Image (cartoon, rainbow, N blue to C red):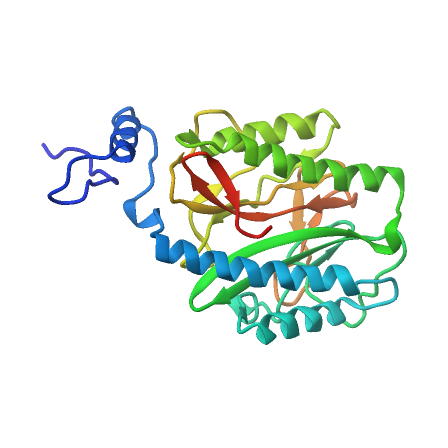
Length: 287
């Protein structure tokens, strides 16, 4: 009989490293482990880091210029100009038919909101701006929440704050040789204190050499489940936290088939970073 095909292989002619031993230990106990191709080289990490610097610059420009009365189409132009001006390429533009350079998701739009001239930001709106940069073939992905005009209702303000806390708590749970499910468990536990829904239909993902790689980083679940996280992996954490139910639907009026909206029409908030797993824990590459 043939044995189960292994995902992990030691480098030929070399003694197993501590990383090899850890991965093989967990694989031998039936856990899902990464392939070696998911472990980024120092050169690749340097490239992703540079892409992250440009991505951060783009979102800083949005933060500097965003204001009531502007359209989300204006945000798209800010992002495009800032990214291209630094030598980068907006990853979203043309990706599987997505028509713009950035996702702008207002209030009850959970994610993948398409910039439009008719979507004009109002005082008290909350909006997620999600941008991904390609630089020299390397990808970095992040998003931020903005409160338009600087203030909103106490309920929306709390939602934005808790969503950011969920990101930070999820990142703190991502330690070497932990599991994707540890991230999701920590996020879900914190969100449930406020009776918020954690979106289950979308997730974070590996990133760096491609827009979307393994693993899928779910934001709910149980400890010890999902893929083993080891030093050298690069991935996003991007919890989508809804004020009400976790359930969402695809907007039937979106001819491109992208915009996701909360089922109950209540607001949603999301923060995202690209992280590098190191021997000490995660490092933010989109600071």
